[in-house]
Structure formats: C-alpha cells, structure tokens
Image (cartoon, rainbow, N blue to C red):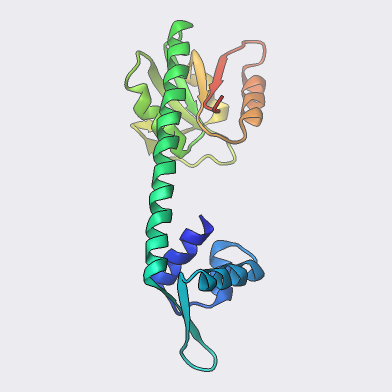
Length: 193
C-alpha cells in the first residue's frame, strides 16, 4: 500500500521532496528515503537533478506497470473484503430474523455501515435509526435517517443493535450495557469470524 501511494504521488508530482512525502503519508523520513532507494534499485523510478538543490523522481515504464499491478491487487482485495462483509452481514440479519427481531439500529458510522444498509434491503428487518458515540456525533442525514447520539438510542425502541464498525466494539457493547441496564438488548456486530 505504501509503495502504491508513493508511486501515485510521484506520478502526480515528481518534484516533491522526501520530507514532503514523509509528512504527507505519516512515515519517517528515513523510511521514505529507503523506499525511494529501493524503487530506484528495482527500476521503478529514476532520479533526475533539476538544480543543485532540487531533484525529481520520475516513474519509469516498469514503475507504471508496478503501479498498475498494485492498483489491481488493491481493487481485488477490496472486492474480496466487500463480498466477505456482505456474507457476514447477511448471516447476522438472518440470525436477527430467526430470533424474532424486527426493528434494528445501526451503531457506528463507517464504510461497513453503508454495506450493511445495502445488505439490509434483502431481508425483512426495519432500520429505525443510526447512532454514533456522543463524542463523535455530528448531526447529519444518512439513508433518510437523522444520525442520533447513542445516548438517545432508547427513544428509537430497537429490538436489536448492529455495531457497524470494525473497531471499538467492546467499548460500544459496554456503552449499550450502561444505557439499557437490566433491560438487556440484542447486540450483534460485524466482526469477521
């Protein structure tokens, strides 16, 4: 991924300093230098001096082919991730249906939530709201629903909550436990098995 991002940036702007690259991608200057040296050794880029203070990093035909290969690899990975995520979500929704759930709430704004919304269209469950942590809450409309702070989740009267993010699930479960207290509620997540 780092190589792909570097190759894309060098194609866009070959006269960029190593310090600028390092800052833009949040990697150490020494790592940036090592990556560029490795790319030169592999014949992916060539260095050309523009003056005594500035150099340019230009992609070679081999570098363009490598960028294309890495892009296709990334696309393939994302498609596989989408297919697997859709399978996991379908299973979660079927579990909810078999358990007699009808009204669900999505908890957590993420790309995975968008896939959950698409997958939800194939089952007999009703989305009644979308919530986010109070500290991350930002008033907005998604899929025709006003995003609510999680502290207001009880007002939505869900049968089940689907945690629609891949991180921080334990904290989200704890938060739901403190909100619902003794009145237990069905909570599922989309973590891959």
